Image (cartoon, rainbow, N blue to C red; front, side, top):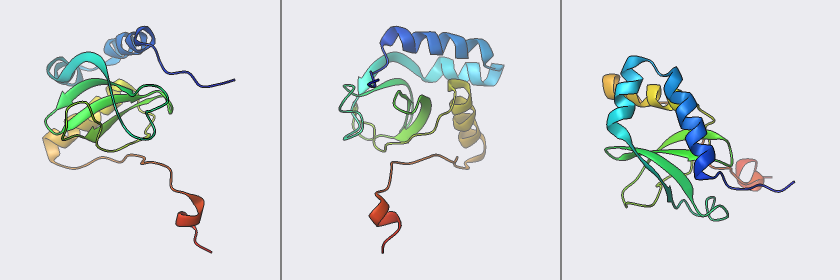
Amino acid sequence: MSWESFTEAELWEVIIEAEACMDIPAGRLWDVTRIEPQKWQCTPWGETGGGFWVVGLAGSLVLWYNDIEEGFNLSPWTQYGIIGEYRCSQDELEHALQNLLRLIETGEGFRYMGPPIPFDVKYPV
């Protein structure tokens, strides 16, 4: 079985389901950060699927769906259309929004999973 990129229709199904689960603060944050889904680049991981679906912007952070890992992520960005750092958290949309809300309220960062590290770099012989 080969991997196929998420379609926009599949993404909308996930978004609509998540909207039903959001508490009021997360829903309000979603209302002001959401954008129409669009594909942004994140080289090299997003090349096969034509990029990753971006669904929100909040200052220097982009909210996007990693369809390889099947989860939402927050990453920095400086150039429109390019995700600054690959992340592979498997968060539901409402959980990613809670992370963003906590960052706004407390200034504290959040945990995330980064890109894969080659075995020989991670465990040198």
